[in-house]
Length: 375
Image 1 (cartoon, rainbow, N blue to C red):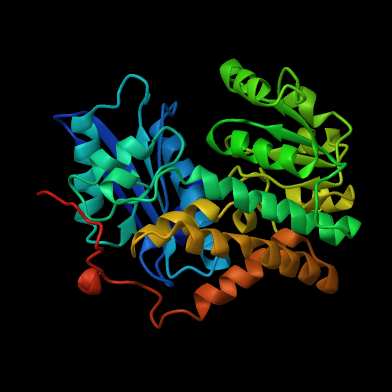
Image 2 (cartoon, rainbow, N blue to C red; image 1 turned 90 degrees about the horizontal axis):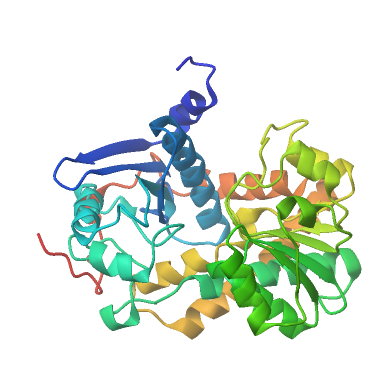
């Protein structure tokens, strides 16, 4: 790769990137730590059939950076980390491979704490935890917090309420039309909250069964064929809740919405400081609520698990996303910038002020009470 390659440029900004290949199980994985200025890196493990190792590296670098900003905005004592396992989770995932992955996590001595992400589930984290002290998002039976999608959806809902307060003067989705692209673990729960709040909801998902499950639970919800169709509808809120890269130029130009607020990570395709996706949204009069501000409920939940999980405590902290979102939106308005730039500034200031030297070392790694490591 040339020095001008975007992946190379991202790599230059990261604190640590580790590759792992286990010959016995076929595990191929990457862990990226963007920053540990605020504490050990915390972020999920994505299990995905990447087309190439370069694609996997690109994804893990972007995701780990997003986690650093997300954890900083959530006020957590954690830096940004992320992991990817290269493979098809429906065919390649085995207990032996997950235990090998746990050994990879353990080898970093606590600098990275993992959890669930796309392609990994609570039951998987139970297996990973057999070989590392640093796995969260485990089942309640194993001393964990269970499904983190519950609070992820709740946090995104709080971000939507804050955007409604900022734009329309009332913190509710009642009477608003909301389009949700992706109704898997998080999106389905978000639909539950929106319907309960009185919103008219339109959904789509590449997995037909996911849309059918929503329709079964909420017959009043409208289903459209794909994200292309959804993004062209007249909506109050567009909510990307699937994989990243949802907001490219073509999608932004199609949108007929007041607000974009969703659970997906890294929604903006062009993150340039000037003329990028955030500026393009602002120029079209669309209020973009940064994903890493509103989708931190899940990481708040798994961070709480490290110290003996208390759901009500984690839920109360997640409810704070409402105030954080309002602060970011008001700051952007006051300084004449985009919400994305305002949120970046807050997160960067917190990381810069956090730790002399900017690196968390494992010599003081916490011995989490829920750990079940077996070497």
